[in-house]
Image 1 (cartoon, rainbow, N blue to C red):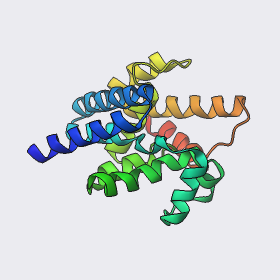
Image 2 (image 1 turned 180 degrees about the vertical axis):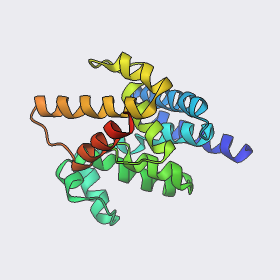
Image 3 (image 1 turned 90 degrees about the vertical axis):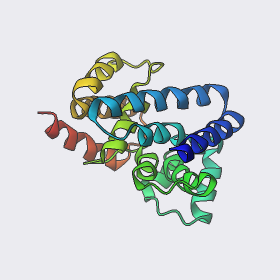
Image 4 (image 1 turned 135 degrees about the vertical axis):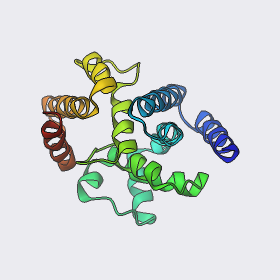
Length: 193
């Protein structure tokens, strides 16, 4: 337990020094909300909190730098992520969590990795991180209050709502949509029935 406290302190100090203030504050809100969701669903609160803290650790890099790092480090991200480099901050962040902070817990690593795209049948920490990132208290998109309320009672319906909204928003602004988002949306639509 003491090691977790030291790890959390080290992560927070690094984030505070390296992220923009608003990104750092976002990370804290996501971590706290993710821990609260973990409490509701009986998941590991410490893992959820650490995943929330770490989820945007790679947002210090530009899109060009993310591609460069992913290629140099031979991160096995899919082609769709390379086509939308901002999505690489998940896989690059997962690698940073391992290398910078010595995080070895696969629940945390996979949650950081997949939070940008989501996926079908996500493990609990991954799903809670995705929800926490989409619905943290400062998020303000049409339907976020409903999604936030649903997150407290039905994580699958909330995940579907977040994915459906994200896909509609990306479509409206003619942005590329990662194929995993469609697969995840369909999966969580079926789970939420």
